[in-house]
Image (cartoon, rainbow, N blue to C red):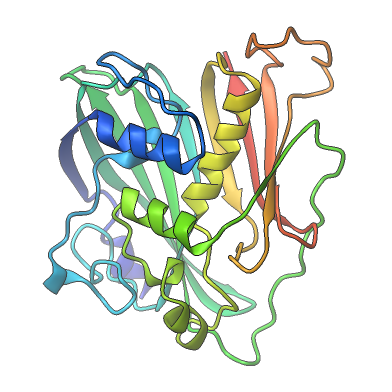
Length: 294
């Protein structure tokens, strides 16, 4: 299997879009910010480029999990469960409302491993986003996808990790069905684990709806934005550690670092590195992240 899947390495596709105001207004409301005037030239907050280049697959091309059927650009991994494992970003220049944007995606790597719950396939995709025909990308993103076997009664899950305590920044999030639906709609994400309770519990074997990894990452960056509105993010990386379900509230946390305890309020310069993480209601770490500021 590994040799066949690795044949997909180097495959690429290019898509085009325009950065319009409506998705910005919609995510602003979904994240519970006051409405603002969205005007041409306004820079997108970090990660909001995910509102564009949506997967416009025909209905006849959709597989049983709500994603497009395997094959095409992504390799045809013969495992039923798919999750967003993490991402790494370089934010090189702003993406602004009104920009004509191009995203070139390339399969950077495919790796097959045997884990404690069976076979795993990791696919790494490199995305380069360019604005208005520029030769250099405004954003470089590596997207890590993991495919897993169907859950078995004998599966042994990895032990949970306790989340750090004493976060200077913390916000509680209630992941109700409406929040998950709105984010799925904004990103045109048909993956049934986020909205189809019967499917996610009876077919994939999870206890509840799964909160989108990109939504949690966006909420972590939004926490940074709330505490440092002018923060200029240079890089960001996150890793999904444990699924978050809609059954309980969860928390997003931030720590601007002990080297900048007396940063000037509102400057966004709380320190070169900001540690960010999410935790579930039991205090277990669910996402680990780091942002670096210019």
